[in-house]
Length: 303
Length: 259
Picture 1 (spheres, chains in turn yellow, red):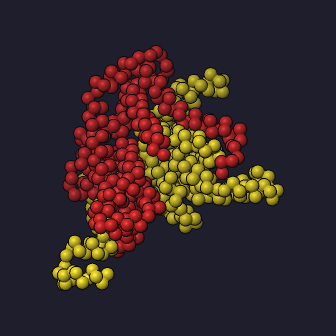
Picture 2 (cartoon, each protein chain N blue to C red):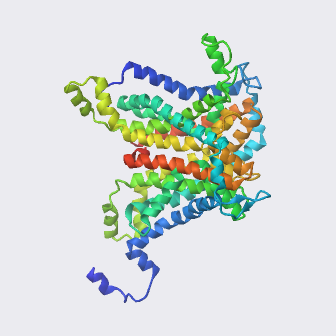
Picture 3 (cartoon, one colour):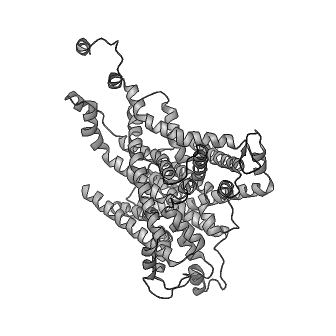
């Protein structure tokens, strides 16, 4: 350090290049700045605007009137929209629960599969999900259509006599959502289960625990971080979903996501749509915070 | 945890779940060759819908738009996201925690909320909605994902090799170009791949930020599904699925070879 100082000109002259060369804080700040600026303008600022918008009211001709009030929020809790919100919450939680129940054994299977096959099996789960999301939901439309493939199959097996009329029903929406979000649940679960040391289960067996007890007392508790990460990754997109109900739910199944979309693009009541968005964000954030407080997560998200 | 083989029941169960995952895709492909226009039952084999598809000018334009948006947003987001990941991994600076929180927002808020907030923002600043607004929005949701992937890759990065390069007389830029970047390149590439996939797949945010003449493939498929369901959609889907499958399989093989 001393020899360096000796050779340098006096420090009085301010130079950006020297600041950047010598000051690591400045270097870090310079590297993060593009991301910070970009995300501030296109993510934070728009969210602030929407928050303000949710407290304003709709103008007479579809514009926005600058009069601070809470009527938009009050309207969300009237019976009509209250029902939609409860229903969305039900669909979101239901989807998450079914994904957990369907995905857990599959994740267990993957974690126990022989090493060589494992990466291939994992790849095979992800493969269909690189195709387009709208296309995957459309495929279910063909299957669930009245008199379509599922109906034909069930009637051929003599399980049902008449068409089930599944398309354009809440059941169809749930099937589509579970299909869409299953990998979001399976991957974090797999990451958690795969980390569990076999010696722990051997120890449980040595101590006389039957396999089911070893599972309940060792495997299940140790996979909680995966369950939490999977729940968050499934619940958040499920709550805001409006494409699946649009395609598979018909006019009967309206979720909070559909309400928001309609307010912004057809009804043109932006303040009300903004309030609905705020409530949706609040619902998902409360759950996420509650879960992350209970157990730290982060690693499981990085599969 | 691989010593104990999964029981027969779990294997049978998993086989059925794989069936559940693949059945829709297979049915989609089979029905793209169906002669029946309504596409409810199998009638007979034809390649007619592929001819219809290739003559469809709107599909061509939508494909061009989709690729352009995906390419530009991937490149920009990869650069900004990689720089951010480097900053967060190596440096401590003012507003570090705030920067980290902002990075997580696009990942943890419902897509529809991000979509409407961008719509409101663009309308407020009086921008015409179109290809530019879609691309700007895609960059916004891709930056955090790229940063996340690159940061994960940087996790085990040994700073000593950078210091060694500098001790040998390389300046910061040369060190970055010759040492740091090649080392983290696999992470940067997988970040870019993720960004590309997210952009190609996006429906929700594109839907809110699109204007006249900026239809993308997901938007086009959606409007076809809502208005006129013919096997042409299946033909389009089949081609899409095939191209993605081939690219992924090539990617996997390339990765195995390198290891």
